[in-house]
Image (cartoon, rainbow, N blue to C red; front, side, top):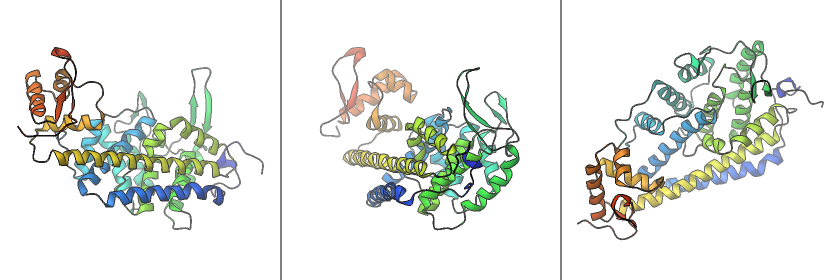
Length: 374
């Protein structure tokens, strides 16, 4: 077969091919990793499960936007997700979110929580409108809630030295391509559901149906497909977070597949391996959550206010730099005197201890010894 310029010009399109044997090994690793993760989860209480769920959903939303260069406020995302999922989150009850963050969260949760509902053109248009509530992408006005009507190119490099990585199908092809895509995606067939998730993501990104937001919507579609594959709205791992960590490889894998002949074996191997790594990362996070739960079990019955709970959680999760009174006051938005009282109280209870140094340089860390009530 003579290689065409892009995959959508190949004779196979959109019925892509892959080497089943070449994909089988990595596919099996996905199922093994998933089994280990859910085995550990099932042995734990709802509190630890909910903590991991909140972390994973929040990370999915933040990472998917960050892949496209959009940085969301972590506290706003976490607060918005917690409220919608009905999860308690001490210290964040009064955190407000902007319209953009709310829209991104709405799209992500609709994709995963309502995975059994058909994926329709209207639903995709609603997601697109949620991503761009002002009708603008940065400084540019875009068509919102409709398919694109212009040629779409993915370009990088400075002005005059641009490199075209990919040119999507012409606008006249978008509607029929998307109609075929939506008919296919929810059709029951013999394709492994995790393999079909990889195919769906590649196919949607290849069509690139919108003026902007295709990456975020494409990853939301993938998350929906994972929910369907597991018949479970709760995602305890974040594929987008792993894609963000491997962003260059992610873009390269997509670009190579889109310039291919229709044999997508290499893309599926990369996609499934990335999915496995995302599940393994979540398992490591779960192990850390178990250790955290054991710490709080040790502190059961010791009263802590919201500021103290928030800071102790931050220390357990990995505090950036040294904890000093001034930093406590800044993060919790309290006075230095209040911060010092909070800290001295935790020192007296054996939860915090003073590190080397004194005066203004005094810093604090979690106590490695026995916790007591004094």
